[in-house]
Length: 117
Image (cartoon, rainbow, N blue to C red; front, side):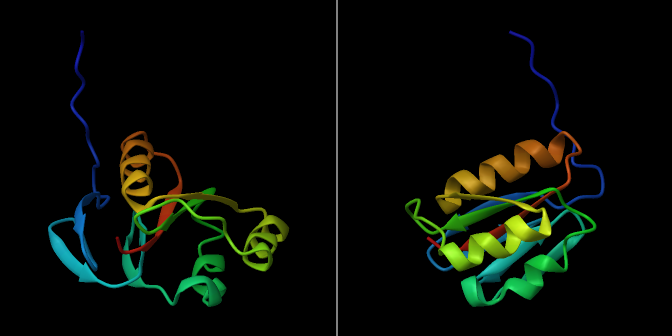
């Protein structure tokens, strides 16, 4: 089996997570966050659509980590992003972190909006 070194260049990978926090690029962030290749910012949850809509020019898909378990996204939340042409993919937060890192290492235009586990 051939192993390839994962390179993130200047982007920040999600290094870890735990109860109420995420570690991104070696820095611990508490609470809900949005992670992009450019950095981390706080997120207000499903009512805070503008923070995610501001990413329209730099991402193609946003992984929404819904906490410890996968959950359906509110219909009105999903429809806002459908209209904006941004892909929204709900998954459990641990899976969202892993998927974000894999696609980030491939140079893809991704973001993760994360609820803590």
